[in-house]
Image 1 (cartoon, rainbow, N blue to C red):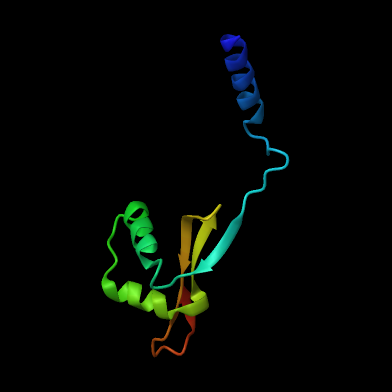
Image 2 (cartoon, rainbow, N blue to C red; image 1 turned 60 degrees about the vertical axis):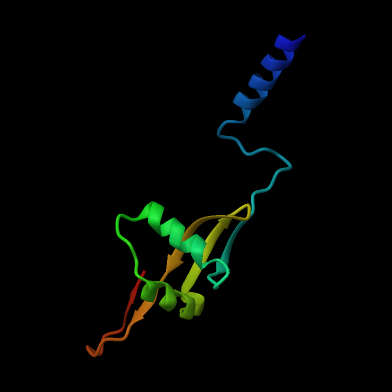
Length: 97
C-alpha cells in the first residue's frame, strides 16, 4: 500500500509541472521600501549584484517614495525596483532604474 501511495503522489506531482493548480492563487505585490524592510533590500542586492551599495544609496532609496518598491511573491521578497531622477544641470531630464 505504501508504494501505491508514493506512486500516486509522484504521479500527481508530475502532472502539476508547468500547469497552474486550480484553486490555488499566487499573490504578487509591490510594496514600499521602509526602515523596517530595508535590510531585505540590502540582502537582495548583495545576492544579485556583483557590487556593494553604500549607506547613502539606501538612505536615498528610503526617501525615493514611489520610485522604490519591493516585489513580493506570496509575501516573500523576490525582487526590487529602485529609480532616481537625474537632477544634473544639463537641462535634460532622465531617470536611472
